[in-house]
Length: 365
Image (cartoon, rainbow, N blue to C red; front, top):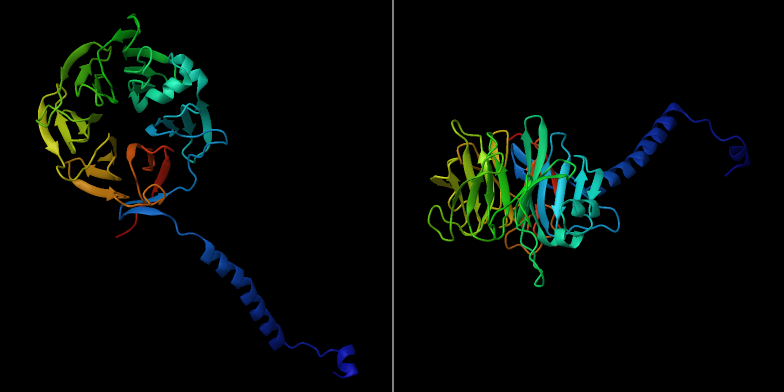
C-alpha cells in the first residue's frame, strides 16, 4: 500500500455505499433466519374447523406443588378454570384462561369438607359447574377411600359455592340435618343438573346405579345394575343433560367399560345408544355451541354433533409409547371443559395430571 493511499483513503462512491448496505442487510437477515428456523412450530390437533393449538406451559404450578391423577376440570362464567387432581398440595388449582394461577385450595378446603388433605387426595373425583338463576355452584363427587383401617371416607356428593363453601351433602354422612342426608352410594363418580334443577348422580365405580333427585335433593328415582343390557352398566362413569336437540333434554350416560353412550329421558327411561363402535372408554361430557365433547380414557377426545353424529377424534394416542410425553397425543383423558372462546382444557388419569389447554384455531379447508 502506498503512503498517500493510507493517509488519504479513496473517497467512497454511491456504488460503494449500495454494496455496503446490501452486505449489512444480509448480515441483519441471517440472525432472523436462524431465529425463524429455531422457532418451534405450534402443536396442533384436529383439522379444519376443529383444529386446536396447544398453549405451551398452561397450568403450571409453583415449586413445591404438584398434580396427582387428573380428576376434574371446569370453567365458570368468567372463564376461570378449576382443576382438581389426587394431590394434597394443591387439592384444587384455579387459573385464568391465560394460565395465570389465581388460587390454590388445600388445608382450608379440606377443613370445609371435613377431611384431611390426604383424604381429599385419596377420594377426589369429578366436578360439575352449574349456573342456577344468577348464582354459580360446583358439585363434587367423592370416591370411597382406600384406607383399610377405620371408617371409610368419601362416598359423597356435595354442592358448594365458587369459594368451596359446602351448601349441601348427600351420601356417606354421619347424621342428617337441613344440609345433609344419607344415601347409599358405594362409589359415585359424576353429577349433572337439568334445566329444571333436577340432579342426576352416577354410582359408576360401585353399584352401577343412576339416581335422580329434585333441586332440593329429594330422591325421585333410581335405575341400573351391573350388566350389558340397556338400563344396565359397566362403569357408568359420567352423566350429562344434553340440551342440544330439539324437544325435551336428555340424559347421556358414559357407560365406559361397555364402550358406549346410553341415552335416557329425564325420567330415566332408555331411548337409544349413541356411537356404537366410535367410542372406546367414554368418561364424561361437555357441550358447547352445538357439539358434545367426550374425553375418552382410550386415548383421545371425541366430538359429536346435536344429532349424535361423529364430528372428530382428536389426539389419538392409543397404543403409542410416547402418548404421555408427546404434546399432540393423549394417554388417558379423564375430564374436559370448554371455555366461552371454544378453547378446550383437559386433565388425564396419569399420575402427573397433565392439565393442558388447546386453543381453538379453526383452519380453512
